[in-house]
Length: 156
Image (cartoon, rainbow, N blue to C red; front, side):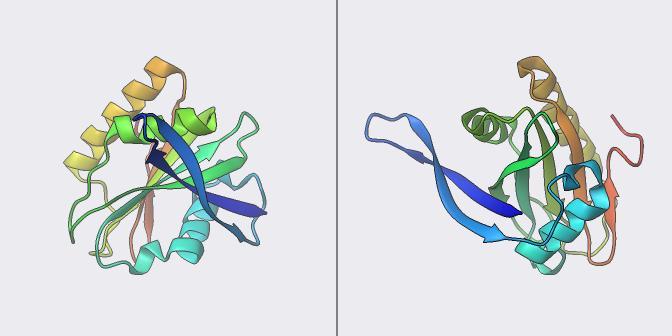
């Protein structure tokens, strides 16, 4: 499957546009979004999230068939935090026409357990998604040799 990475840019008039940054041919089934473990493997292979020294956040945009339509870099933080702002996430989701999204971020400590801040941020992102009709399908935290999927853990 071809995995497309996108970002946003401002035009001279101040409007935001979607820009395709790169594409990568990856050896994954197109419906990987149905399996958190496959998403983790993909993100580790493509971005090295399990080895990054600072927290990074990516958003995976999906179509109605749960197929990946694009991957967006959202933020880079420090050794123990990064900013996950619903506005920046959903601007990108709307520009690409996502029907649903998955958020992935890493914990450089190696421990993938969700923090209180992770849970609160996930709740905000989910609320915004429900409001605009682009649901958050999962938020996955990637550690060194483990991951935490909000869906697998039964968290809202």
